[in-house]
Image (tube, rainbow, N blue to C red; front, side, top):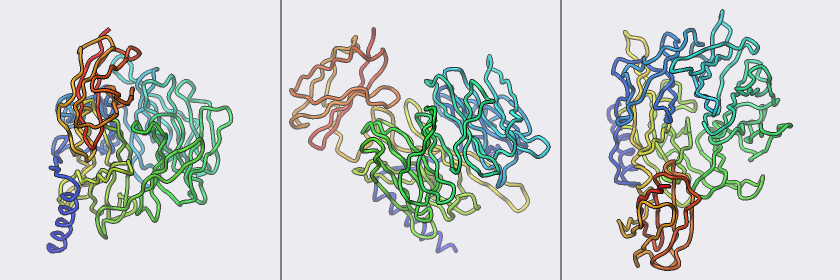
Amino acid sequence: MIKYIFIVSFLVFSINTAFSQFVVKDILAVHPQASIFDPEYNTNLNLVCWKSDDDDLWVSGLDPVTHLFEPSDGKGTFVTANLAPNGAESWNGPEWMLSSLGTQIVYLKAIWGIRYLGIATRVFGGWQTFTNLQYPNVVYAMATSNYADSTACLLFETSANDGISWLRNTDFWTRYFYPEITLGFFARDNQQICCATDKSRNPGFVETACNLPYFTSISNDTIGAPCMWNDPATNTRLFMYRTNGFKTLKIFQEVAPDFWALSKQFNSPLPDPYNYITSPEPFTCSGHSYISFMAAQSSSGKDGLPAQIWIASADPSDSLMRRVSDSTLGIRTDPEPVVFSDSAFIYYTDVISGKSSPVKYSVRKCDTGLGNLFTSVKGIEMAGEKISVFPNPNNGRFKIEIGNQFGSAPIIKVYDIQGNEVYRSVAQSRCTEMQLEGLPSGNYCVKVEGNKQQSAAKFTIVR
């Protein structure tokens, strides 16, 4: 057994070293004695919602510098009790539901053994809760989480397994419904429902914004864990899922309206028995898309078998594949990518069990090594500070000086603080003007790419 663990650890180290000179930083995010199940993160307010072993709903803070739980046991504000216990018919914890109407949490409430939708609304720093008794036997619930949305949306399935329902937070009593689909997750940036057909498990998505919702098919694969988002590097829609017995992850790109083409696919970076890809989730950082996932010994990732946490680039031209959890043999679940303004981390649940003690769910935080907006994320040579932006700060009319090493016609890209590309042009000379009067005041990053070189600089727009 010791020899086997050594071989696996050596393989993990070798693979990781081959891809990058990266130092793993995998640390406790909570107190060593805390037990926290399936936390969900709200970076706008530096908050975390989670469920305790006693099935209570709590909200904790996040330290704005260390990004660790505050207080360290997670018990900042008690919200409500009697959430549905973990099990085969209730498998996810609380979820954030965000919109311009405010901050809410969706969860499953247990009343006399029956599971109902529960909604908590943040009011003057406290929480107001109610239970929707109209829809019993809910299996799970998901919600949109974008403060820019005028209204939020939540979806759920019931044990009847007859389709996916959704509600809007302006009217929790009017149900919208699409039959014979399952595995529902909202797209990361809008209110499309990523899902699979109920019988054949083929991937697709449902448009919820129209009067007559319709299903768009992606492929004929048998899938799990569908997800969709907008890739800031190409400004196109990407759709991701697991297939091949959950051993392969595929990413499709919408190359034309309703026409999807396979963009990238990969298998687990580790050999058998770590050959399953579980819990894949996309995230964007520095204007590029990445996937966090587990290289696991089981297809569900929840069978009490060891797993490792990895990230990979979604860009087909980028070979980045990196282990971010430490090399110890551990039972890990629910990796959650969390992108702050200055960094990106993967939080995950470390399942700790002992012969004489109950199972405990600790939370650990892994550095992705991707850095902030002004850090290179591609595997090409950095040219250093070989560009200058002036006058800085300014009201939107900047000049940028570019060194000769970038070759002819280098690409100029500007990103906002969220990592979204907001401007792109081709430099026609060594001193080029950027007309950015249409952008709001704030901090930005400009990146110049050309001749296998790139360099970045910060600047500020002030009105």
